[in-house]
Length: 348
Ligand SMILES: [Zn+2]
View 1 (spheres, rainbow, N blue to C red):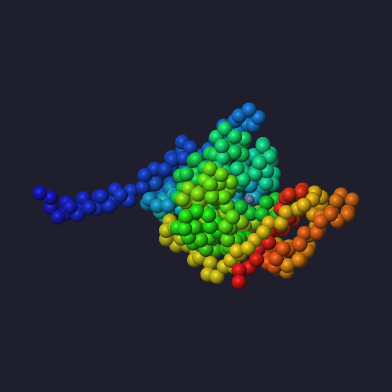
View 2: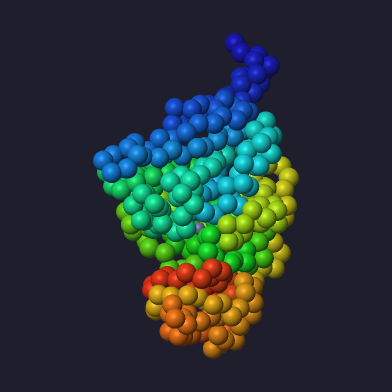
């Protein structure tokens, strides 16, 4: 006959067994509870390209919990997210962590090493437009496929960390993506607030077909995982303020998800932007901005001029409505159909 003490001990054992953390493995690399493990996901070569490598870290906590994937370098010339994760991989103590953090340090290695904006030097594609990827596709499509299978599928929450690309002068903001089930969108809203960023763009326009998710964060959302895209930094800079903003946001996500006991509070009264528009160039030429990031503009305000290569003005780009300049092109080259600026109307 079992004594009360035995029953109590059994109960204790059952509870601790239920809460025991098991090892976590990605790409052949296993992290034991309370440790940091690092490795590289390999994207196999194919005729026409040499493949790629995706360096990652696993910070595996001592208690089971959410699996938060933080992804940098989806665009290879966006440096502040990459540098922020380099700091965070040693700043977060796995022994003080509930759950697991997966860090992808440079998602788009061909673009990073070749210093290209938007497009991969391997196939001319924008990695953040080819999700969920194709196992037998071009290099960007295969990178997306590996990220979808090995990282997004393994995570419970995903943050795709960006900044203004090498040509974009950007003020910080978060995209709250409303695609997907209501509970996923609501969890995403809380993560957006937990970022601590003071401007939140409400993004209602993402695709809803999981087989054609297009964007990284949308790939997670359409698989039932709350996800965000955040933007902090610009113009290939590596400034301290933009890096620190991402570090602070990560601490906020860990607190919000119950993965770490303390962390900064959510932003109290952010500016919500429910109407926004990327202004596209209708011509190819030289761009001259007339506003800077963060400027408030009225409807019709001149955002910039595009001239031909002999100085004749081809196009004047004007604000379609009153709002704030979230980003504006900060370098002269512009091709027809490329973004010139992103304007957001402040929610009343
Ligand atoms: Zn980007």
